[in-house]
Image (cartoon, rainbow, N blue to C red):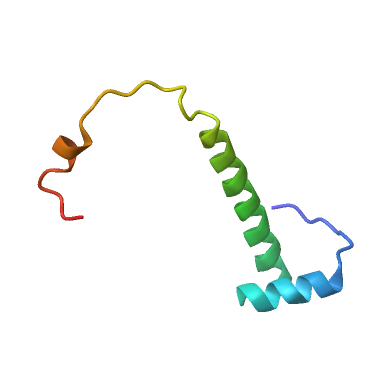
Length: 67
């Protein structure tokens, strides 16, 4: 863990805390950073669309599964 002091928009923080129902600013910033990383990773995965060749039969793979 590192300690970082930042100046942030107080109204934005209050609005985000209310919206997320998180209790602390620390938990809010942790949440925001994790969501940012998740979003960027999803974007990277979407860039692979159409670039990976896959052969298979989803119907056969799904046999016996309760969907």
